[in-house]
Structures are given as structure tokens and as C-alpha cells.
Amino acid sequence: MSTMTARSSLNTIVSSPWAGAATRKAGNDSPADAEQPRETTGTIPVGISLLGTPTETHHGHVASISSDRKTVAGTGVRNLRVALGLIWILDAALQFQPYMFTRGFVNDVLLASAQGNPGFVFHPTITIANFIAPHIAAWNVLFALLQLFLGVGIIAGTLARRSSLLGGVLAASILWSALVWWLSEGLGGTLSGASPLAGAPGPVLLYAVVAVLLWPGQRSHETPIPAPHLGSRAARMTWLASWALCGFLLLEPPNQARGAVSSVVSEAASGEPGFLHGMLSSVAGSLRGAGPWVDSFLALAMVAIGVAVAFGFRPRAFLGASIAVAAAIWVFGEGFGGILTGQGTDPNSGPLWMLFALCMWVGLREARAEPELRGTAQAYATSPPSSMPRPTVPVA
Image 1 (cartoon, one colour):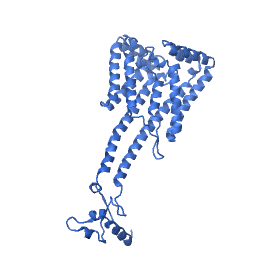
Image 2 (cartoon, one colour):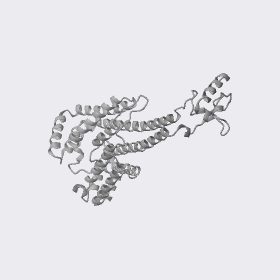
Image 3 (cartoon, helix red, strand yellow):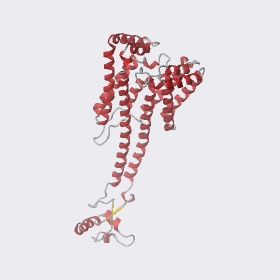
Image 4 (cartoon, one colour):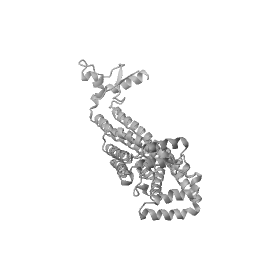
């Protein structure tokens, strides 16, 4: 900065009432003296502009906090959406397994899911299974490609920050999940005595729930696509209802039988590779006769997880507990969804429960950050500029 420019700038600064108070020596300089131009080098309050007006540094600070929070939130939401897309792609890969092109898929998956269900589930499922059976290979390719489209579409819409694409693909995934839950999973066994240890209330139901939580909101061009439903009361009540449903299902008579738990683990061991088959068979043997105790304890734990997170009682601890429970169910009750047997159509509910918990974790972080941000903004807005800290910078 030249000498002439510096002097001109300083003259402008000290002629303002803000600068007069800032540069006046305490107890020595009078206001009249402060208003006289001075050729002095020293410091300029950052809170004062070179035009002699208070700057918006405090507002800028709040804006930077908000921007940082949005970046952190955007990264978390983006990762959750990508994870959902990857699970759909995994589903598509599993659908391309040779077993899915045979009548075994119709008999062991579609027809089996209809058993024990009321008529509005049983009859449509039988009709659909008989309709696609003669051309199962063609239909299976269609199913696999559809799931691949959903996974790639969710990831592409997320990374490209295109809300319209992301919303359209998520809507399609919710519709497809509802159809599969009804016509292929028998409503997840919720009406036929299925156990949450074996996947009830159905993984595709959780696909739809997570898709709703990650539904895109409005965004600016500078920020990632937000997810306004994360951290909402509706999200917490959905979490409570989902875990309470699992607890209720575990207390139903079929799941209170002495051999209920060991039977689930034994079925999970069927068709697994040697090391996993041996481990699960051993666990099933050790749990023989303990069905009522295990299921009752897990029912109470699941209800506690739902209530604690929904009403904010140590939610992070209980979200961590929910991930641990989901991981244990995925290994011992679901055998990793049967993806190592060549006959698994999806990874089952374990990974979806974990993804659901991570959604709630990100939502919890946002719910806690908003009041803090609002309080910071209010403090900056209501504090008089003279009370704000003013770091200084040297003038050349």
C-alpha cells in the first residue's frame, strides 16, 4: 500500500465515530481530537471497514459456522445415500445368481413367502408366482436390472446433486419395496409368526423407511442435497414403531417356543460354508431350549432401544446398542442373509437396521446442532458491535 493510499484510508477511518472510539487513547484524546486526521501507523479494527462503517464480521462468522455444519451434514447424508444405493446394487448382483433363474426361486422364495398369510397376501402371491414361473429367466433379468437401476440412480443423483433425479429414483425404490414386501416377502412374516431374528418385519420395508428418511429437500447450488426428514419427530416415531414391532413379534407364541431361537440359528446355518456352518450349528445347539428367555430379553432390549432414541434418553448409546444387536442378528440369525449360499436374494434386514441407525445418528447430530447455531446467531445479532471482540491487523 502506498503512503498516499494509507493516509487516505486512515483519514477516512478516523473520521468515523466507530474509528474515533477505537483509536482514541483512553483518558487523553478528546472526541474532537479523534476527529482530526492523523498520519499514524498502527492497527485497524477488523470490525471497521475502510469506508468507516462497521463490517459484518460477526455475521460472516455465523455464516461460516452454518456453512461448516451444512458441509458436515451434507457429507453424512451423501454417504448414507451412497450406502443405500450400494445395497440395491448388491441386491441386483445376488439376483443374477444362477439359482435365481430356476424354479427354485419361485418355489423357495415366492411360494414359501405366501404360506401362513391371510388371503390378501396368499392369493396374489400364488398368482404372481404361477404367472412368472414359465418364463422365470426373463423375469429374473428384469428384476435384477430394475434393482441395478435403483442403486445406480440413487448414487448418480446423490453425487451429481440432482434433487429431481434422486427424488424420482427414491420414489421408484419405495414403490418397488412395497410391491416386494407384499408379493415376495409376505409382509415380512409379520402376520405369520416370523421372528425378527430371521429378518422380520422384512428388509424391503426398511429399504422404504430409509428412502423416506433420505428424501431430498431444497438446496442451493453451493450445498449438497439436504435430507429434511432426518432428525424429525416423524423419524423418531418411526424408529420407535419399528423396534416396538420387533419386540412384539418376539413375544408372539411361535417365538416363545423352547426351540424357537435354536431353530432360527439352525436354518441360518443351512447351506453356509463349512466354517460358518459349524459355528452356527454350535450356537444353535447351545441355545436349545432357551427360546423364551432369549426372545423375551431381546424383546425388552428392542423396546428400550426404540423408546430411548425416540425420546432422547442417551440416544447415541442406544443407537450404538442397536447396531450391535443388528450385527448379531445378521450373523447368528440370518447367516449374513444367505449371500454365501448362492441362494440369498438380499443381505436381509441386518445391514438395513444398521443403516437406519446411522440415519438416526446423523439426524440426532443435526437436531442438536440447530439450536446451538440459532443461539450463536442470536448472540451475535443482539450484541452491540462495541462489545464484540475486534482483532486488529497492522496497517502498512
